Image 1: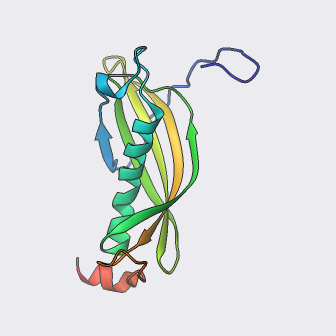
Image 2 (image 1 turned 180 degrees about the horizontal axis):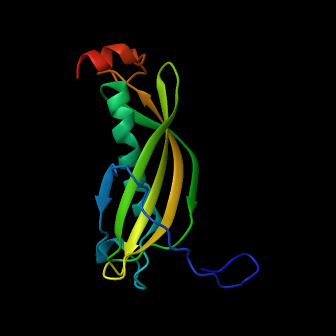
Length: 147
């Protein structure tokens, strides 16, 4: 990876978050990459949106729509063959909206168990009804009672 002053840096190997289950795990295919084997940023963004929508949908107890991508940072490139793990946590809940922080890790060279954080993003979703108009989020107590 190249920094703004054109120095080359090596991605820092990290560990997958302990004690957390990923919302999504996926391996990009050659059709998801350019001719150099680098996965398209748009493909990664779509996967992040899917992963972030899962906890938002659970909290909303139904349909949600993405209303904002508050931040999106590509920290390291993603390659064909990387096994990506997407971790998502709700960071804020409003009357109709849910904000989710998503972190993405790539497992590379799985025999050597190299793990690199590749992306992080914050997205906001709004709960919608059958008419696709915003609706109030249900109280937490009603969600717990249904489980």
